[in-house]
Length: 510
Ligand code: FAD
Ligand code: SF4
Image (cartoon, rainbow, N blue to C red):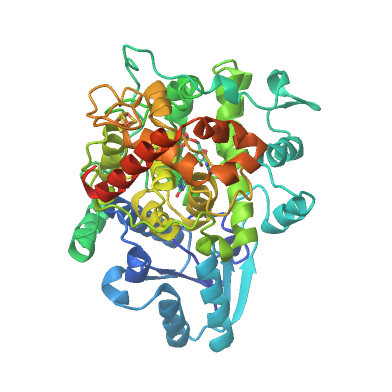
């Protein structure tokens, strides 16, 4: 055959449109493991292992389905890039036509388009059916608004899909139950939390572990706690367990944090959806069914579905609309380097120690830890967006650029100047104190902005208000913040600025 289907590491579904268009016999399948993809950023071992193990399992599935699969493992590809290896395979096997589902990542799509030109290949990119809103549909929606807002997009998606709708009305009478999704855990602690599904590494995964240690031994993180689903079958089991046992508490405690409670009541489905082991619609439908059968309340169901039908699709749309600019944006002109302890979690700030610590251990942190602890610190400290983006792309099992980048640059860092957020998401230590037990036993005091025990979050929060006072005063959504900083007298300002300077001076020792 002169034709091949390229399957990327995050397109692992037999319903991949390029596979559906080419049944076994009509085209061979190419799958490539590349050192380059694992070293573009300093990738966490667990993320590398998840991708490689899931790819190898999927290649077996393709062979069982009758495909001829040319699979190039790390041992074989050497220093060649993914696209370079595909080019070589085309030469060796004499392919002149390539089909693939459109890549999730902008850079890879550019590289494949370039390859098609230089190698004179007939490349067909098929619209990826693993999203509920296509790139074109999103662009069309966005063109109707001066300011893109997730909430309006989400309502459109609810109407269009009929998800959580009672004919023309939103189920439960409201579009959004966010206000019911913000409880902290009780003072005494979260109590017993049913653990998420866990899968013991099989032979394929063990082999991958050995190769990860061989090639990427110095990379961050550990494989010791690796229990992630690596096949569709496991991903479905994990999803079912979440829906049956953990979902009912998800909504209430979505934003809650607690020491040594890495997963809370979260679903942990992101890596499986991102690799296409699960389709977002099937996840949403199972969640809606649980609500319709009265097994979870509307706030939990809506809170969960909003993340997938709303935020996830919205982020993808924005990514394709704004790339490659999004990757370069630095609206607040941040210039500070990422502290070294971001890679180890060795800091005295309890909240950062716990959130980064579990990231190193599990390659997982939930949304509020990413946004309001780690991302918030990065924003307040003025860390260079590209360094922060590289870090977020490296350390989570679910990290793929199309969803990581808009979350980091757009939501956490305000690096795009508020293209889809109405204001920077900043908070002082008081917020972290309210939503967690991190401050108990921390050497810092969240209530102090200057003085010996001042919490770095609180100091830098006020420092941020001071530095960006004009911008904040000009925006009605942040006018109150500007008023708060305006209240400081000269002596207080001087003391604050001194403390901020000290904090930056000692940033590696915080
Ligand atoms: P749950 O809390 O159980 O939520 C269910 C699902 O909703 C998730 O699996 C995910 O598919 C979707 N979802 C929730 N929030 C978002 C969001 N803000 N954007 C898009 N989808 C969302 N998610 C990634 O998949 N990959 C990333 O690289 C990534 N980087 C992030 C970086 C930052 C700074 C922030 C603030 C968020 C990031 N997110 C990312 C979004 C979100 O934090 C994760 O999807 C979530 O924590 C994954 O855990 P979970 O599956 O237990 O999610
Ligand atoms: Fe984090 Fe500050 Fe609380 Fe310590 S006091 S845990 S640094 S918010």
